[in-house]
Image (cartoon, rainbow, N blue to C red; front, side):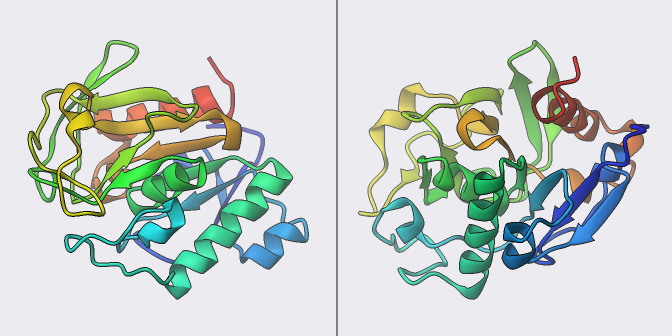
Length: 226
């Protein structure tokens, strides 16, 4: 257990609040963007899973495959402002599922607005350090970090959505055909760890390889513990 009393902030929306990041951050705190700007005492902020983000956040048209529209939702505004406050204060960010996609957009990347064979289909992922674990997979959109500063930490072991990488004009992006399908990404400029799967959905986190790998990446990239 980390003995430094680290505190993980969250904005009270989405699929979780603290667990299983309590394995790294013993304390948690509910925060608003205003709290963060005004100096909330948090060591990192987690943005959880949920509905699609507006494609206007990353400058794309709205495809017929997304459940969001051009206008930002109340939650889009809340979480976007919270991330901007963290960037201003140099506070690291953890994004899970929707949160991963939002931090990808905030780092200058974009999203594939629809992919096949990821929603509800857990699958193996390969990692940059030679591991292979099974991720939870309940998403229909995908991070597109290519072209911005990032480190690809994990990707689908085998491409699962060949020929179906739908973007704003309702066509499939051909550039994805020779790229890995991202699952975990580090965005160094905004100190954000983007985790596409859901570590909070695993019932035995202390023994689950995917959860333990995510915690290892938090320690390595956010806490700089090797």
